[in-house]
Length: 609
Image 1 (cartoon, rainbow, N blue to C red):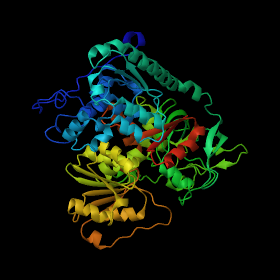
Image 2 (image 1 turned 60 degrees about the horizontal axis):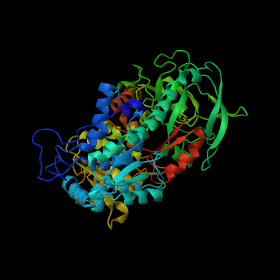
Image 3 (image 1 turned 90 degrees about the horizontal axis):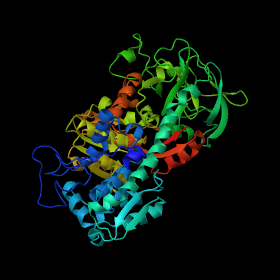
Image 4 (image 1 turned 90 degrees about the vertical axis):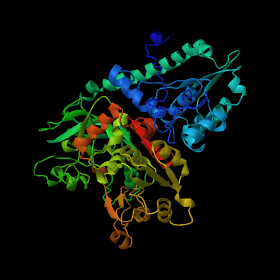
């Protein structure tokens, strides 16, 4: 069946690994029970890392050693506990998988004896297991996933079905409420055995093969983009753009003209653009440098269409990430030559005025009137012009709809941890605000070895994602009867070693500082506050050893470091798929993406052009 469909089937051993693996004399717990979670409770925490193995280590190995699964061409299926794993893994990260199916899966493990036993042993509580429960994950959605269908086969004579271990009816009910397609086939005369799998596995292979071929065709179409996008070299290009005509107004779809690049400039075709709150911040009129009309957008993945005179670092066909923090790399630039900062000022003066480095613009509307640039990027447009020093050339092995995330928010959160604060192993961390930037801080802190990560938000629906990325504690600050900083100091005795504000709210910035550890705590401001807002605290907070600092683009030197982040993603040591919660097709869908970002459940909405 797999040969007919032209796909490879990988059947890994998902048992715990290493010497001295702890076990219990039970078929449903220990080495014989493949619940796909990363255990954080003794004695299992060292060896039971099935979730990371299946979602990170194994895909990276298959790509590097066998070239299988590149460009996101992978699907997932499983049986029983493995079926639970397939459903939960795909629903936690829909952008990482093309399709999902299952045989006799444990559909609602937090509501059955198997799940209760496993989650309490591996994760410490049934509540923690909700982040790995397919029914709970579906129930937390406001709209269906990208999966057009989820195929499940279940034997009617399965003893575990009648024993209330599998609960497929709970999953289908949750799917119905959110509009998610699920095909549940109840098969007469079949039990829980492997004979059941053998009977229907051909249907599942065909189900995945059809969707993998469709995805492969999309990948090939993207790779063939160069001839089409380069036919206008040296000439003006007319294309679609979403133009911001004024603050607090919807973007308007317009046909504009994009001029050829001047010396030191690069014209690119935008392939994917991720919505960032900074775009909305400007559109809502909070940006003191906001100029209208303009083309917003600054978190994108692009293909070079043409280059201006003197450009040597990129060529047509290269993949690039536009960077609002440029890097001129000149020996005369004390900022680029210093390891202390990434704030190259080479084009700061014109960029802040919505202009290219020569003081002009490259966009004209249908009446020939100029349209301002935004953050040196302006990627809510099918084509845009960038300064060469704002182009980070990246590998073509990562799809641009994923690579674009490194243009702002995700890179900023990771860099705040790794570069600005240099969080050490064993540290305690508090993160305020669990949007994409805040979750990137959580992820970065876990990767840095922080042992206690406190995730703070007023929306508890965001907590499961934070816990999945490494948060050890969650705090709903809206439910406290005392200031949140006091609560966190009580939780930690002296405060957290490192605290991060990812909200842009000055009162939260103060709270983050005031729960930093007495004597050495460091608090980092990441969120951008509205124009005119000022910080305040008692000087005593600083006198008693706390450090207050800020970060821009996470301290990454853009052209040097963004390619490294992309490569880490390719190598499988850094995952970003979980940030993409919504996708849209066509630049004209940008207003819909903005609505999704306002909806509360969106981390990153990626618009593919």
